[in-house]
Image 1 (cartoon, one colour):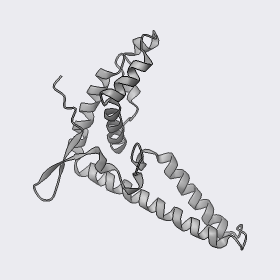
Image 2 (cartoon, rainbow, N blue to C red):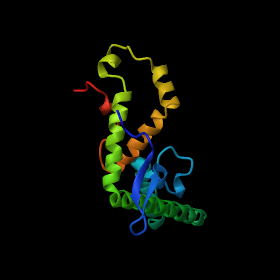
Image 3 (cartoon, rainbow, N blue to C red):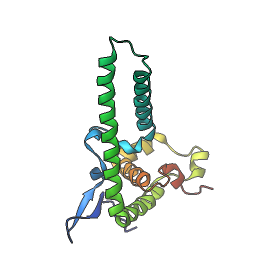
Length: 172
């Protein structure tokens, strides 16, 4: 096919320099040990935002017992700091993506083709001709899972569909 399976993107560096950068450049310090960057989990971020809002409201309305006010204020401060760091990480990742949008979208299109060729057809899935164990081993052995993860991260940054299921051939 001639498609590149190297997992890096050519990004702009200082001045005229260009450098190879992996998908890890979209991860931040809060993403340590995480499968994907935190901006790929908007529901968790929204839950944290709601928790901060509820804690602030309960403090302002006096619903917290006087003996627990200090503890709640400390917890609120920690959660606010985490939310601010998550927002900062997302802004940094979006800036990196926007600065290198052409390279990122080109890589996403390459990954789209590679993944589409690696997935079983919809007819095979419907007729149960697909061995799930074989698919799992393929994802682990050939790095197919890494390619899917990279595609999902780039798709999320581009505000495109990140579910790889729609890449299956023969889909209507």
